[in-house]
Image (cartoon, rainbow, N blue to C red; front, side, top):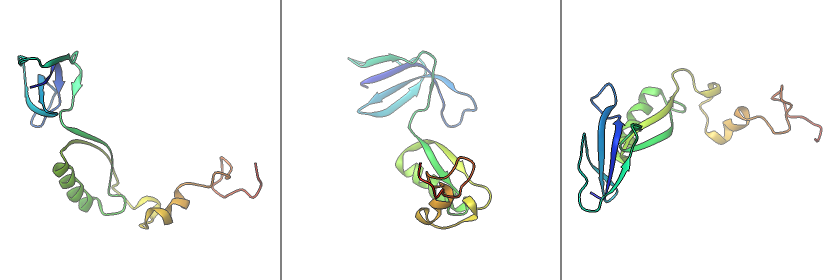
Length: 131
């Protein structure tokens, strides 16, 4: 262990609420999560001050069900997350029609999603005057 993060509330699988714990790290990898761990040798000790900890990789920008059906994306993307070490994901889950009811690739749908910078604030029709 070369890093010990003490006094955190760890959000971990199998527990409905955060767990009071310490997190031991060796060579950049989490090696143990348990209460009252003792530092070894010259491990750096950091006080987590009772803050929440999400051990693992957090992917805070995911989009599921945008260009594929939600059920298909959920299976594919969750498997990809697990293979890449993502333990926590924050995702926008589309449960209805495709965005703007378009299933096209991003370049062809972007003009409908993002109006021209010359458009007036109340209109999505491009302005013909120069500002």
